[in-house]
Image (cartoon, rainbow, N blue to C red; front, top):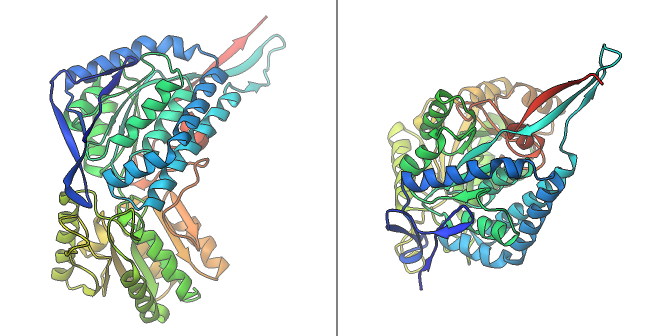
Length: 482
């Protein structure tokens, strides 16, 4: 039976005004329909923003610890459904069971974290030059937030936007990506069960080109937070700033891992394989380029090919790597594989769509490694949202750093080295918002800032941790002369 979902607007589960729906399928078995969602339009988006605006003052004036109590109960509600949500995420987005379970747990942890952070909200007291002046600041919510989220982390990314927005007293409207909206709706089910007041949080499914645009351009929206592709992100940024709104955008990545001649090559191969082939390479922080010192290049290539070929691909509830999320994503990956061949890169392993009884009509592709890649090749410069790795040979550390930075993106990065001086130079000189030493480019702590440089981000505000609170609040300075 196909499960049917509604929008959540002003505390009610409602159908779209269009009367139309759309369906999602299992990317491991596209003939299997998973769920039906509302094909909303501008009218639904407008209703949701108006509901959020009407609830704004009351929620902002709710004591922060009371808001925290609702977030805490939301976390408990999600935790009670962890296995169910893990299975839903695997079936709708394609992640392995372990990857999906980790993402659901991350979501639970985010709500617990911001529930406790509500106890620390307030402001700062400063020394005044006046004898009678009590000088201090107060942090106030920005107002109504418009949140646009992608399909690749369909429950965790909504969580790290929704939780800090609510903790700080903002109301919100979320438009999740249509490829896999089910996990995001589960957050709103948990919020509703926790007793969130009507209108405080609203979710509207449907195309971003209409629903998302209507939300971010509405006059009652004060802040916009977007995660997705660079092309769409820059349009969102322009539309939001034209309306005088506070905005943050997090977009693509072309993330390097530098492998030094001092590195343990087996460890380096483990790190790069995990960073590239985890979540089927469908992460903005995934390692796309291995930049390898010539002294260990051949040994590294042998090791990374061995690891790629050892990965068992199939449905996410049984195998090491699941499918790509959709036919269009699979076709995009296969197109880049052909581009790499045409550019002169050497296909070391993989490169094919997987077919046969295990794969059926699913969107499966082999883990793929290209060698003899030059950094000006398209395969080394453009984001490939699939399990495709470019291995680039360099003569020394300076060339490695120059190659790593010679890119329009700057999201995540890492180096594998036993030389502490190299490590220090790398973290200081790499043009990326995240720099790691002897670790994969993927995997982020929830209590520290996350964001990119250059075309990976608007470079305005960061997400997660205290940075998430900063984005959703605005400071007022008080001069009290009693």
